[in-house]
Image (cartoon, rainbow, N blue to C red; front, side, top):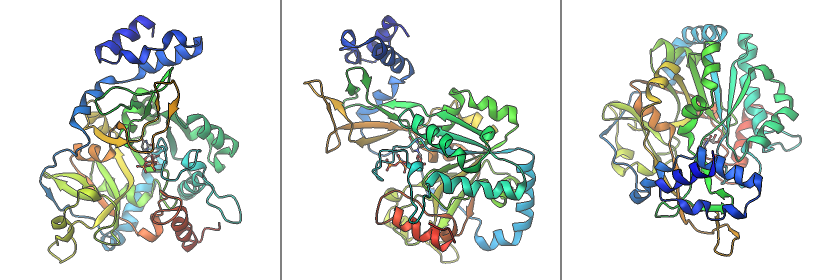
Length: 408
Ligand code: UTP
């Protein structure tokens, strides 16, 4: 993009200040800033005036879950179907690794974290190992798409190449970049991180499919004949990916999406729960769960909102393509955003100073008609690493890995 075009674009959104230091920049820096302006969707900033209050929710009612006992009875049928679909190349996997992992506090991408005790065991390694179980079972590779962000792309690619993809066939791995969203002060004015760079962050985990489309990766999906995409978070080291039983169950029950869920450990556990919202599948975040919903019981006397999501969803590609052009709700989140001070230095604030703009995968689910809520055994499939210590940490994940016979 040329300077004049960039100026026109930023002026349209009242963000001319981003070009304030342009004349001082080197040739490369100028190019980077013009490129960033070209890529940036400034329209989101108009939402700053709404603040970070949550969207109004519809009427929440319980959604039936397919429980472990029911799955057990149909396990063979589902697994056979899933294996058949994987062998036909109809299933791809999408690793969401675009997050910043701020809570873990490592400078490297989260997947590069070594959780081993007596040897090196990386988060990426555990995830790929789990996927290799499916490769061994079916005799076929599942195409693995890895979403990174501008902030961690180079390190992630270099690391996985150096580790030879932990034994995964490189021909079945495709990286793609998540789109970025600008970060602003409370009035919607974009912060500058340096004189030649706007403050920006990945646009939330709901940005994965539109980023895939924009990056041209959807063409690979089509060419390969992939009909289903299993998305999953980088930080659950017990994550079972392209699990044939789950794949088969979602397809046989003709659902647009399948969601792996765990029975909650306590009514106030900090996981989002599956529900219906105005009759459509949806998720209530833990901080939105009222006392009334927390204590509600179903016909059999069990908690009515008892199934927590673990960011492992199987989406039908056709249905995703129908919703991708629709506008997704934008979540405005108050965050600490590094910015350029008057003195021309980058400041890392101690307290929140503005907004980031994110879309969330849970909103994609709400846009779809049907969802299979599929229970899994939490001790076998849920070991998230969000923090260094305490709840959902490296420590708790190590214990769970050991329970599952993984040497660390
Ligand atoms: P989290 O919501 O835990 O966010 O991501 P995070 O950025 O990894 O960690 P914190 O909150 O800064 O500590 C859940 C999953 O979604 C991915 C993450 O990589 C993780 O696998 N994610 C999140 C993205 O891929 N892109 C995003 O913009 C946000």
